[in-house]
Length: 98
Image (cartoon, rainbow, N blue to C red; front, side, top):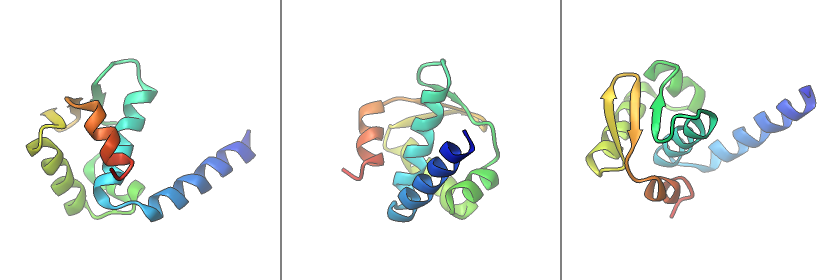
């Protein structure tokens, strides 16, 4: 079990190193969405600073990217800790770099 988690962490580090900020945030949101059974509603379990640390970004970049995803209609912020995915297909395309 530990070896599996280490392999997952290694894969995540490699993937993050190849992604830009938009892709990192999109992948993070999609991952949270898949882990919960709440459909397109996501409850952020961490602060923007924690997200930035987790994704290897600055807090400003996280906030700016979330604002960008909101302005182009991919997500909507219900409040600081709740996000709703409006266009999952476009968010998936962004995560994949398309």
